[in-house]
Length: 229
Image 1 (spheres, rainbow, N blue to C red):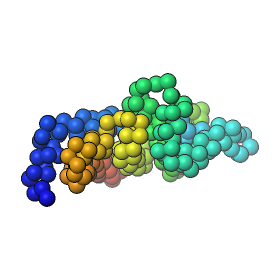
Image 2: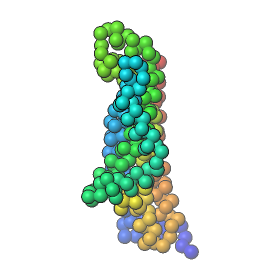
Image 3: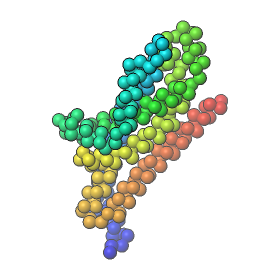
Image 4: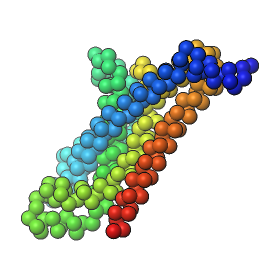
């Protein structure tokens, strides 16, 4: 049986295999970044759609569309959504990063919409009444008064959603993307030893997510300090 030093050498040093992990991490971060942007933009739109009501106070068509979308996305596995996007919706595309980014972005949007909606609803209703009393339209009140205040409630859970999204991208190997997890599998197939490649990938994931968690914690503390001023 190989000792620890031999296992580390075979998994990371031999044939510059560390480059596989580095390249895989780059793909992981790239997919998570673009998916996060898509999820944030679409999720905000979905949240505003869901909050829209008719004059009689009942949910409108846009609200129902948003509700159906969120229910479908949250009710199906993300890996299944990725396969549908790759083999059916975008089967003519050979760009795995694009397909994965769109798939995870659409998935993340469903969760982001609930985060944004909750942040908006957390703002006191009096703020809306104050904006309307100043002569602002509903859209202007939302843009200039409600959303800036809701932002403080939205940012922390959005950070947690991005961390979750980053971990979920570990399944992009299903569409032949050489992400961090797939890099570990490639090294495993060459060394015929699973422990060190998989543990190495897990450590890299942990370090990246720990850094993001620390940054998110600092951001939350700054937001709390601004509230206390």
